[in-house]
Image 1 (tube, rainbow, N blue to C red):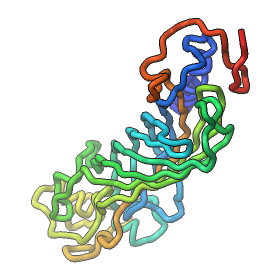
Image 2: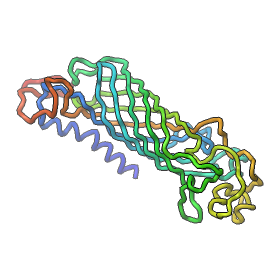
Image 3: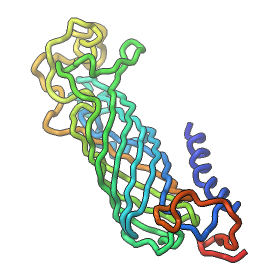
Image 4: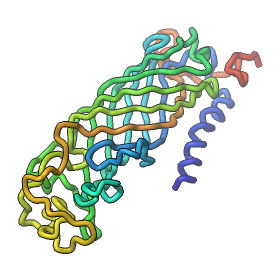
Length: 298
C-alpha cells in the first residue's frame, strides 16, 4: 500500500511538468487558479489517544482549489478524507487498559481557509519566490462516524447511545496551521503543511462523560463497558467493576485532530483578470519556460 501511495504521489509531481513541456498553453497569459492535491497522516487527540503519540500515521487524502487575492493573501476550499482511531489497549495506564474502549472513524472535512504568506509573489505567477512560508486559518465542517468491532462485525457507536445521549456526527471545526511552499517548476509547487483542527464535540471517539446503566441490548452493553464481566461475560484479561455513574471520559475537554500533508499545487490555465480571463486557448507561442521558470524565446 505504501509503495502504491509513493507511485501515485510521484505521478502527481511529474505529470504537470511533463504536460507543460509540450507547450500546450501560451506563457504570456496569467494563471490565478490553483489545483491542490496531496496525501499525508491524521492524528486524533481525545480520551482514547496516547500522550506519547504526537503524530499517528493514519491515511489522509485531500483535493482543493486555491486563488490569490493579493500578492501575499490566498483563499482555498478543500476536501479532506482521513481516518481517526484510538484504543485503550495501547495505553500505558492501568486504568485505561481496564476501561478497554476503542474506536475507528472514517472522516470527511470540507473547509474554507485564508492564508498569509511571508513573502509576496511577483507581478506574474511564475515570478513567485522559490521558497515561501505561510500561515492559515478558516472554518470547516466535519463528518465523523466512530465505529468498533464486536464478534468480528463493525458497528456504528452513535446509534447505540453508549452514554445514554445522542450527538451530531456533523460538527464545525476551526483549522489553523503552517506550511512551507517550494517552487519546483513554472506551474508547480511542492507544499508541506501541518494543520490543527479545533472541534466543537467531545464525541469523536464516542467517549465523553459517565457510565450509564447497562442496556438490555447485549451489543450496546458490550460497547458501554467491554471489560466489565457483569455486562460482558466473555471479558478476559484486565477487567473492571465500573458501574453507572463512574467516570468514562472528560466532558470538559473537546476532542481534536491534526493533519500533516505533502501536496502538489498546479497553476491551472485560468485567470481572474480581464486580460487573461477564462480558459487559455491553445496556440503556438514564441516563448517557452526554461528550467528556472523564466521565459526563453524559441
